[in-house]
Image (tube, rainbow, N blue to C red; front, side, top):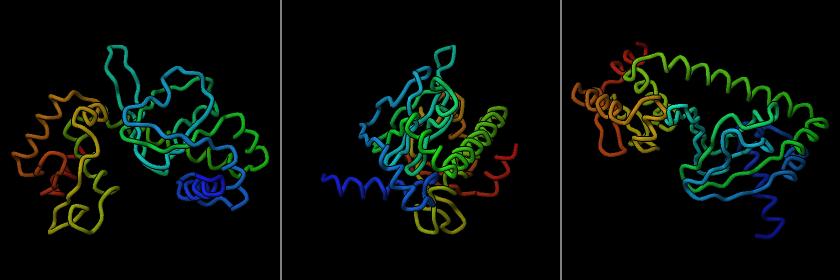
Length: 238
């Protein structure tokens, strides 16, 4: 790939991102100059909990998970990051990464070095405000995760399924509403979903079976259909 084409690709990825999408062309150009493109296979570790913090990342394509290692050896998934989102922003305020990040599929991402970004922020204060906004959203998300962990597993699962359909669905078959039902696909394995919900695979399987028997959902491998949206919404509030 020529230097000119690579520059256009980086610029386009930055413009499509949640954090940097409304920057000016000049700001995009300055940011692109410090971005380090990377391509990683499925299951690759981006960084580990406790590693020295040297950069944060923008995910251009693919998906990654952010997770913590617990004292008993289990893992707790904090967040699934989709294309266009950033992760690891805490390095701007900390010396070490507080969690692990691993790719869930093949990924293209950009490493944004902390030192270079801080220098850019000194010239472009608008970037600092954007980062603060991103950190605020992450704090809200983490607070929601803590609240969810106090709920019964069925309520956690109900919230996850409803949110998944809202984010990944649309008014088409296998996208969202079809005759009063919602259809979507689980983006992860059931083991990973259990970690995301803060439970174990056996409990998740029992909960899915219970929802299926009661006619709330229909599940076929990764494809699931919410047959009774109102019932799932009631369950999500418990």
